[in-house]
Amino acid sequence: GAVVSQHPSWVICKSGTSVKIECRSLDFQATTMFWYRQFPKQSLMLMATSNEGSKATYEQGVEKDKFLINHASLTLSTLTVTSAHPEDSSFYICSASKAGIFYEQFFGPGTRLTVL
Amino acid sequence: AQSVTQPDIHITVSEGASLELRCNYSYGATPYLFWYVQSPGQGLQLLLKYFSGDTLVQGIKGFEAEFKRSQSSFNLRKPSVHWSDAAEYFCAVGANDYKLSFGAGTTVTVRA
Image (cartoon, rainbow over all chains, first blue to last red; front, side, top):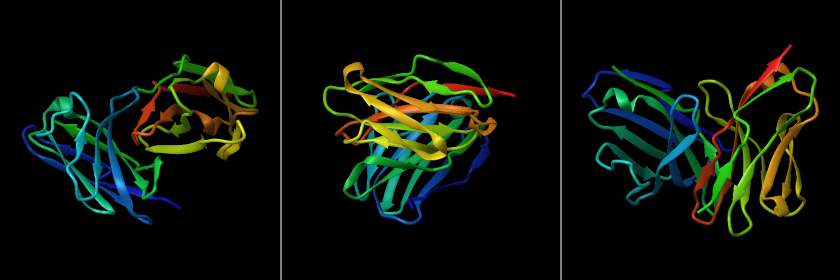
């Protein structure tokens, strides 16, 4: 299989605080991980792509300083939402691809972030 | 850049009836095509994928899809839907830049 987990599954925080979301590939090495954002009743929007040991590549319009991505190992990537505000409330989904199989992504279950 | 269009925002189908979800893509080369299903508050589950070869692809849960290059389409079908098929369905196209582009999604409602 190719299982991807996310932690936490949901989080509520106060405005101005930072929140870290973890994405782990449980049974394979993920050379590339992706972070998506999904608003209610909408599609997935790619935020950034990260390769292990490299800086993340952000999509146009995504604030690098707001959404910090770290891909420190072949099984773990983290997304930190810094100084969160209510407009950052969303469903965040990560995915991972295996080494040499770049065209297929395996998705995590998502993290629901609510900023009060 | 690649793109995906799912023309139907919402489809209602009776349990036991057939289902077809439309997907049109735009990409200059041979695309990698995917269908995912998402239940409320959940992540994405891969139903099926097309990379090359036979243009009729079988997936999980009784779904199939047909790649038609001439129509730039990759429509998803199921002969007989079950109440548990009610969900959001996303078509996606992948290209050589490792990224996936998703359609807007189609919500499927199943009535008894």
